[in-house]
Length: 588
Image (cartoon, rainbow, N blue to C red):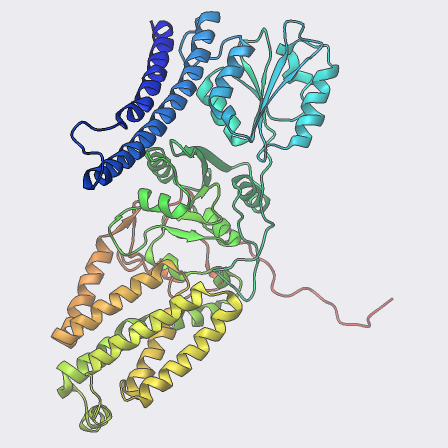
């Protein structure tokens, strides 16, 4: 029925197109109710121009419809010829017809100029030519010529044995389902359609365009390894395997996106990672039903706990050493092809303040730096709010001399302290965004010169007090001490809320908001792990790698955050402290 209806419908549309296009020329004659000259003639010309433009646009629409119908006719014809040759078990199954396969590819992906379809006359296939399909740019054409085409032209083995000794690449598989074949072709594999075979040879000839391994750009360190992930998933796996040379290292591969078909992988160490954690991550990844994902940030927003919270519950990193250390602790990595960042799950709040350099420095240096980070966090959140609360709401708390100094510096200024603080916040955020968007050689100059020029200008103009300049400078530097970028926006938002609470409720508002934030943090979870541990639940033993870090000889068990299947990390061995050296003359 379909075969008999299509030509009739196309012919009717073409005939209707000719009649419809010619109709405005017939109507374009002399109207019955319009006079020959004057206003009626000008009105007639205006109507004729509108009719001609309308007919042209509609004619173009009909031509577009005819083009789409012709493409649809080619696709349906290839399907019908394949079905007529050999009725398959399902409509998506490949049948033994090379010509029908060529027609189907040509009507679909073959319309693109980068899709290569080539017939080969192979001596081992007297029944007909062999069809080779590949995508230019994704396929290594040199490998196709040397390892596939050249052996086929000289082999005498039948087509069903080509995968055993004719085709040289290591990864050779078979497939007979069209959705899988098209997906493999779009990924860069080479397809071989041979007459007499009910399946298609799929040869892995993918060429991965990638950049070389470079230093991390967002998580810098003074000492330690300087190796960052690349955008290619296979390279990321190779980098991890180079560091973790254990058969217990596992990768669970998935495909994300109905349209994009992006490869993703979940990495974990079997026997160390909790099986429930691994199963939860895989189930959440499999539950993603989207057209495509470009970055791991999109995946993090779809699989994380508390998606509406401003606190990140899953961590991103580009450092290989940090990712490997989390694997050894029992965490799980989530990698996406095309993104150099990987996700770490679970990620409590304390994990965002542990950097790779903390494990490359001495324990006393690391403990001191972590204490500075904690003090910087307090200054960045509370310093502007406390200044506004003491100067606007609770001035009676201050000593008289300090109160006189604070109020005396504001004499003659047009704005109250809260407006000055808000103005400086806008200036600092604008300079920060400008420094991020500009090229790196200019960003440092703009940030330094801009801060000096703007700070000096607003003080000389009498808009902002010098005390506000000092406070906001300390606040900006304190927030920049946050080691992970995901938390900087969170603390800036909380600092603004602290400022509003201090403006209306003073010190009491700051205390109430702090209690509310702690309550929210205590209630949060990240893949089953309490978000505010080791403070809630309170575990003193976990403080060994929280605010400070104890020497390595004191660390025996793994961090309990990921709930590892095996807690012991080090087995203490008694070693003599001093060698047994005899006194005497050195040498023979």
